[in-house]
Length: 429
Image (cartoon, rainbow, N blue to C red; front, side):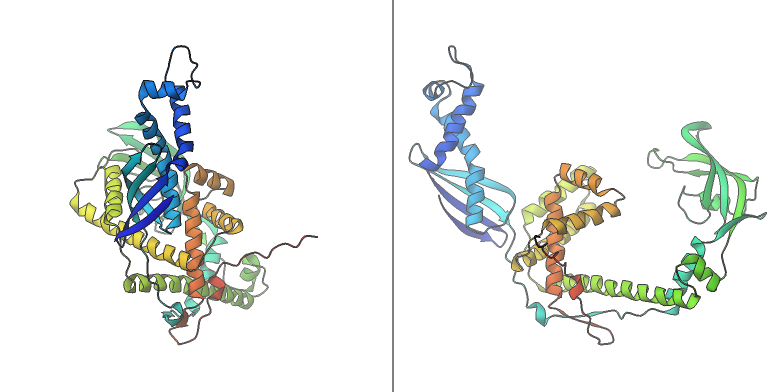
């Protein structure tokens, strides 16, 4: 097979492919076999019809058409690989020459990932925030621990923001109770806005035994439609927080004194802010590259993705929303092209342990077990997407190691720890 590539634009190429007829023969044999199982000829079992009979019945041209349709993806894939072309989107195929038992030629026009000229990363300098843990940061962590170890005490008072209440709820529509619209003895923190729109406002000012009805949108209702909810207060509770002293430190941690607890919180917060420096450096590097590197975008791919998005929303005619989606798609594709070019330049590969680690972390974010998450990802055909994400993060970590990063005080920041570390190979006993 011979092939060559003609660049039509930075994001589109034309592949010209010439296939010796001998290379097409396995596909022609497959076409005869396929057709012999589809057609019925008296005296022959399906799948056993001779080639000559198939030619008489459907014509040699039909056989060649089926063989070519089956063969083109294989030859196309090989040509793209031979010419180091990273194709995206749907190809446009044109058969340019077909001589039975002699030659088969065709062309393919297709969008590609553009060649991107990356800078010398060792010449890039980024400035990130200082790592600074303040007394306010420590106090916030201590307050969170006090809240966790606080106790609720029933009180006789009107409800205020921050109180905890025990309530009953009854939802109705046009005076009729809704299925599943009754709930009793619910515990709720007033001001958390974590249950029903309007609930906080209805509760504030009530006391034990008090009740109030309010209008709100309920789950399952059409947009703009509202139902009525009656809330009844059965108890009001205040959270009593423990005093901040050594006894509290013993209760809330493994430390004996408050000073030891605060020192540990300082260490933990310092480590967290150092990791935030790394995340900030990654974001700054991507922003800098996107603003300074020429990244051509394929117009047809963008238009297709925008139309697909709008069609699913039923908003194909919404020009304002189209403009918004168009910018979102362009931003996403720009970032992907940039990061994938770094993956290619850095010759990044993803091993099984790196993919597994990524999937386990992702499963945790979605509140799923790793097995459940991996099963859903596999069924949705998203494993390749996950591999690409791991490769992009790994490649970005590698080049960040060559970028000069300083904090706002001028101190050098070492980001080598951001690069994924490969596990050492186990030595056989």
